Image (cartoon, rainbow, N blue to C red; front, side, top):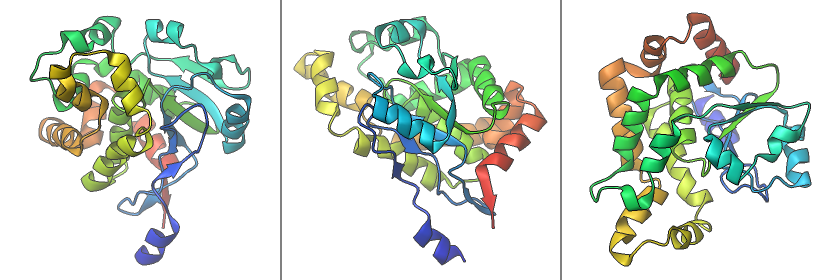
Amino acid sequence: MEAALKQTRHPKQCLNLTTAHNARDLSGYQTADGFITSDRFLRSDCFMPLSDNDAKTLWGLGVRTVIDLRNQDEYEKVPSGLSEYEHVTYVCLPLYSEETKRSLDFDKLPPDFNLGALYIDMLDTHQDSIRRFFAQAAQAREGKILFHCSAGKDRTGLLAALLLKLCGVSDNDVIQDYALTEVFLAQMLPILKENAGMPAQLDKLVDDMLGSDPVHMERLLKHLNAKYNGAQGYLEFIGVSHDDIESLKNCMIERI
């Protein structure tokens, strides 16, 4: 059964949209008693803007709830076309404050900055926002939930990791899911780097900030396990209800 499962389930289900490059189905990964179903969560970068064809594709895939993790200033610069569809519940739920976002400007980052430290800080200091995300996701109406930030890498990657670990997905698979961002955004990274407009001596810092080196997710998972005893322990610690936790697991895992 396990061998057959690996042959028929593909955890790298890119949605092949034209107005988003890192949009994919958070499915296919094995859990202790099954695999992550494709019936609930999609992760993505921001749609700039959302084309009519992509809107039809997302509707056809069953997207009925969208959770936008960006801040208000990000939304004002790049409004989400997904907020305009009356039959889709659109929720703006910034994962971190505008002050934190401004501190991540390339010209303000220290030379020793690394994303692993950022993810740990997000986990430890933005717990109310993370709690609200999980409560919103657990109580969303039927259909799929698409959650996204700007690149679909850092804020989206953190929440994707928590969702997968809650369901018992292995660390290796969670790290793989995070690292896939570099694959899907490969064609965009040179453009993003050029737009950053940073001096050559900061090239490595910019590369690290825009990339998704597996070491950063590995560092986050070690912290999650050591300080909170895993994803469920963390969600309980920040106040996600037992019913919401069980609801999320039940809707994400297809048991075999």
